[in-house]
Image (cartoon, rainbow, N blue to C red; front, side, top):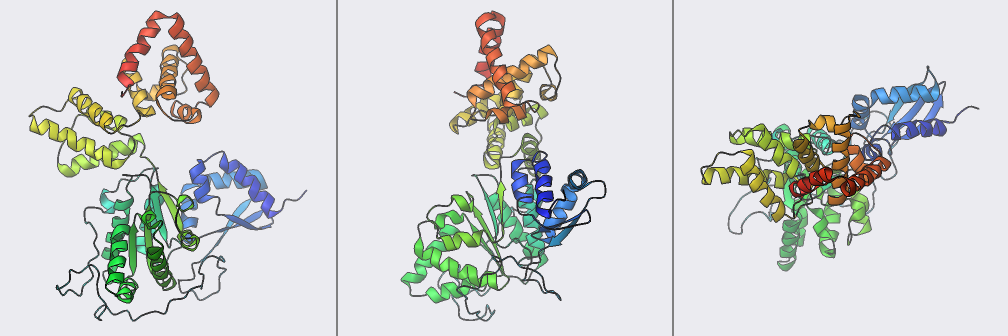
Length: 472
């Protein structure tokens, strides 16, 4: 029976889903649509040139194997790339129905910053024509450490900075928890755009500042000046856009500004602590516009990324710390970059003020207090580090597939503490411990509990380790 293009691609997706993470699957494969199958050549439609290039760079081998498995040795893949209609092209291309709505059009105003429009960033009484971008030069791409936790957002941000308003990522919404680098990345994009396009008007503004300026404009009967000023911007970066929730007037005026900028090929970059689907108190028409471009999340950095961040910070400050101290900090602070850097600064200050050499012992004293003060959950990485140090095993061995008795026992103990001291799922714990499944984690916990009841030497191990891994 001959397969249809939809059936062929569905078969490919089943294989792909087993070989990539859920997040990467949703980001890079969910948006793809199959459109044709002819003579073992499957044509798929991807949202942008950048999207195509990313697939070719990161998933080409997986795609080749999948296509050949599904369509045979002669199976091939062709791409149909959706071109953003804000870019001038000599030929017609198909545009998604949601790409450029024309509702609520805004009449363009002359792009002249030397007119009489009031700049809300200028203190009254001080004449200043130039629009200050409000960017922090310390937040650049150069000191933004890339890892699996932020690769999509950083890559999309870099693409935007090289072609503002000319990619499918408009708006670019960067979301994630506190201290993961949303503000840093927003500034980095703005700084890069200013370097590449000096004549473009780039503006960074927090949502609170935007709201306050709007309130002031209403009080002073200067609403039109406020709107006209923001319609002058070529690249608008709004930080913490979730704070617009519940502010109907602010949402209404931002909706008008958003439409004008977007329809005129200007770039919008937004940051938020949550995805659009989780934003409460926002108008649906505004949320729908947030979804026009790309929503890229920032996740908690991996151990390797945390170590790289610390080393970059130390290099910038011209300081050196022992490797075991750096690793201890990275194992202990797992939630966000801000706390990670804060712990490093606190440790350096402690050593400098008290004229003490920074040793692992000093780091343990200071970091343990820091972790307690921040009421943080102990991490799986930290538990593994403590268990491996206790049994004098390299952590790579614990994460390996080896079945040596002493390694298996250490791995089971790490699983036991991870289940009891963290909120991680059994699947996540197993993934951290050599790619085990949830049944293996349950078996490990049962084994540890049995040994605690029957083996006094083993019970002593657990008591000792319990004191070391606990943050209470």
